[in-house]
Image (tube, rainbow, N blue to C red; front, top):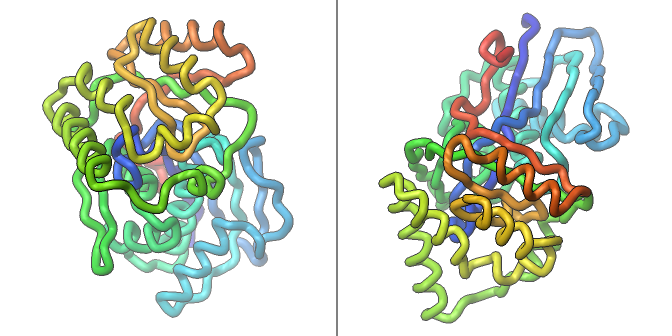
Length: 300
């Protein structure tokens, strides 16, 4: 075993009506520097990482050990330095990034030679659905669905847009955001919600971002039920749209809001949302097109 690096991007899921199936990778990263060692040691260098109690309690190590065990391997001791730009419990795929990094850690140190499909199936089994896992693995903009037998997915052409994320200081647990959703939808509402999602996908595929923005903001699956949990939900949508955004949605389960804007205009939206909400972290991002990368390819 030689030293290597793993880098996994953040991700934003749902994108309005793409509930539990649509996600895009973003250029915030979880990074692991891994070296062989006689005993396990982990260093963490980020305010975005949970407090480290012990190696055995570290989620990335737990995932890696579980994957290794499935293949009849023992995970060898490593020294790992962990850094992260991805805020926890903010709807930016921090748990998916940790899962993907754990899978890749086991893959590298145990020589498993896992295929992309195997990694996706493993990650989805742990996370519960593929909307964050798929873009974290493969980058770009992905629509995916998990079945009993396999994960089916399509990678759309990367939209030529800027991405603005408005991140509040307080976290929102996914369980809390799930609990406000209905257990079932009336047929008429489900059909309308599905139609909105279909038009969103078609508009993204055809490059009609104005239409995509309108569809993003017409979700019927989850945003109407979650918006009261999201501070300044309407304020952010209104301010972003006023200054040129195509549309704004809850990122994942929230509380972060994500706005898509014409290429080159995201900075204008950032400045106006920052002025409106000075306590927020408002950041201009781009789509990550690589997904998880290892070794020298992760240094950029």
